[in-house]
Image (cartoon, rainbow, N blue to C red):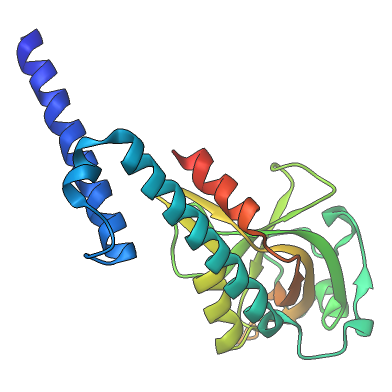
Amino acid sequence: MLVLAFAGCQTQQTRHIQATCKTVQQYFGSNSIDENKCVNDADYRNQLVSRRDAQWSQQFSEDHNRKASVMLPKTSTDQYVRISRLSELPLKGTVNPSGGEADRHVGERFVIAGTIAEQGDRKENDSLVFYADDGDRKDFILVSTDAVDGYQRAFINDYCWLNLGDETSSMCHGDVYLSMRHQPDGVLITTELDGAAFTPATAASVLSVLAKAR
C-alpha cells in the first residue's frame, strides 16, 4: 500500500511538473524554452515560472491602469457626498420596497473608499460585494450593477479579478461611487454602483497575490 501511494504521489507530481512546463512553453513560445530541461531541472523550471509571473504581473497592472478610466461615473464626482463608513449610508435593509419612506433617499449619491469583490457563488455580476476601508470583512453591502454600462461591466469582469484556482482576489480598490436608485422594474430601491476611481495597480502587488496562491 505504501509503495502504491508513493507511486501515485510521484505520478501526480510528474503531471504537475509537465503541466507547468507546458504553460510556460505556451507563454514564451515553443522555441523559447527547453521543455526537457524544464521537466528535469527544478532550478531552470522555477526561473521560467518566476520570469513568466513577473512579466504577466507587469502587463496586467499596466492594462488595469490604462483602462481604469472607464469606471469613472458619468455624472460629476462633485455631486457625491464623501463618507467613510457603511453605517452612514441610508437604507440599511437588503430589501427596500418602493412607495414608502425609502423613496426620499432615491437620487442620493455617496463616495466611499473600499474594495469591490465577487459574490461567493460567482454568479453573473448582477450585484457585487463592497467592503469599506474603515471596517472589517464582516461589514459589507451588496451593490447592484444595473447602472454601470457595458464598458464598465467589461472592466470589472476582465480586470478586477485574479482568478487563482479556488481563490479570487480583487484588484479593484479605491473610491467607489454609489447612488440610491429604483431597480429597473421599480419595485425595489437599491444601492447602485455608478463607477469608481481605482488606485493604480502595481506589478509588485499582482505578483504578491500570485505568490500567496502557491
